[in-house]
Every structure is written in structure tokens, then in C-alpha cells.
Image (cartoon, rainbow, N blue to C red):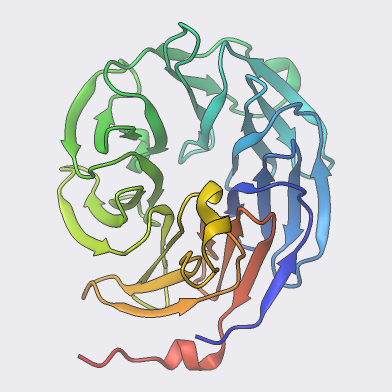
Amino acid sequence: MQLRPILLQGHERSLTQIKYNREGDLLFSVSKDHVVNAWYSHNGERLGTYEGHIGAVWTVDVNSSTTLLVSGSADNTAKLWDVSNGKCLKSWEFNTAVRCVQFSEDDKMVLLVTEPRMGFPGTLQIFNVENGVTETVSSDPIYNFNPEGPKITVAAWGALNRYIVAGRENGSVALIEPETGKCISTNKVHELTLTDLQMSSDRTYFITASKDKSAKILETESLEVLKTYTTDTPLNSAAIMPKVQEFVVVGGGQEAMDVTTTSSRQGKFECRFWHKVLEEEVGRVRGHFGPINTIAIHPDGRSFASGGEDGYVRVHHFDDDFFSFKFQI
């Protein structure tokens, strides 16, 4: 596929996550250089930065009204920001790094996942951020669990906040009850660690990416594997196209430390488009000089962005041919 990307150069180190807001007019990016950036997605202009973390920022999320932003970092804190002015409204401190953050569907709660390290267990914590006013955002979580079993690497809210879907280091996916922390069901769907988990727009199904070189679509309620996309490279991210085309986009590449020994073509640093239903690859978008760490698709399906180990975010706007494309069976 030939797409002319907009290159966003606002990070000095590798990207860890990118996220569109609900309307898709803003794109938020975080990387290992301590900074959270906000961009206009249509032209790649930088709107501003959110500064305050003193470690790599692993994860970011924005609420549906684009008023609050939450970020989680290796400096053992998660911070709540005012999107419009960049002010830090709240900083929560933990014993270990925060690997995953996400607003609940009604924006009233934030889910945080901290990793097990130095004798501290990994935790799932849920904070109340109902109105985001500094005085009322509590310092203590409403729920705090130490989930049993292998380390949780990725997590997301299910539909209507009924479940938390968690992906683990051993390749399994679990449904967890938010009120009790009880594991309702679990299914080992990958051979190696899960690197990404993104919900469909209605949260009835989700896509996983794994180091075992495959991405899978699972139903949320039953954790049944519906579709499998097997590639030839470890995957770091996978996203579902919400409208327009029945595609999923996956990306990854060999580990950054092995990159010097191979060319970028052999490194397989492309975003791969797969047909969601037919499980066939339909195209690739090249560009990054290292593994792709994170992929996000615009909520209306008209563009997508990828963030790589090379420190760049590339925003691709699809052309008219893409929307009229029909897959030949």
C-alpha cells in the first residue's frame, strides 16, 4: 500500500503507546523519554506536552469527553492531567511501575495495573475520578487486588464495566470481576506473553497481540477465539478497524537489540493489514526503522497511526482507493 505519512517528531526515545481521543481529532503519544505529547491528528501539529514524569511513560488513556488524561510510568506513579491546559491534577504513587491505565466506559473510574517487582506483588487498582476536580480525586483506590497467577501485562474494561479483561505473561487471557478481583474465567490463547489488547468499539470482542507471532480476536463474554492472524514476526500491537473496512492492523518486528544484524526489510517492521473475517493478509505499510511498538486506528476508520522503536509516530491518512477496495475471494 502506498500511503504518504505525516511524521510526528516529538519524542527522543522509543514509543510505548499512542491513543486517539473519541472524536479522533487528537492523538496522544507516550514514550520512554518521560513526556506525554498531544497532537492534532489531521496535520500532525503538536498541541502541547504534559511534563512531570521522571521515568519512562508506559501507558496513556484519555476519557470520552477529552477533558482528562491519565498516564502510567516507570517512576512508580500514575498521573491525572487536565487535557486543555496540561496541568497535573493528581499523582498516585505505587511500589512499582504502572504498566497499563484505562478509563472505564462511563469515565467514572480508572483502571491501573502495576507490575510485580522487588518482592512487591503485581496489583490491579481502580480509582474513582468521577469529576476530575483535584480536591475530590481520592488518593486511595476504591478497589485494590493482587491477582493470582502470572504477571498481567495488558488489561482493558469490558462492556458496561462488568468485567476487566486481562492478558498475562504466559499467553492467557482472564476475565476479572471489578468489584471482587475474582477471576471468572481464563483461556490460554497464546504461547508467549501478550503485548497488546484492544477492544472493539462496542467491547463485545477484542484483539490480542503476542510475541508468539500471532494476533487473535476473542469474544469478551466467553473468551472464545474467533479469528487468528499468524505472521512471521513477534507482534507488539494489534488494532481493529472500527468502520469502513473489515480489517485488523498488526505490527511488530524482531527485538530492537537484534536489529543491527539485519536489514529493515528482514526486520519486518511493517504494519500488516489483515482481512478481519477471512483471516488473509491484504497489504503492508512500511516506514519504521525499528520494531513497531504501538498501533492506533482513528475512530472513524479514515486514518491510522503507528509508533515505533525509532521514536517516530507515523500518521497515515487513507486515500479514496482504500475505501472502495473490495477483497477478491
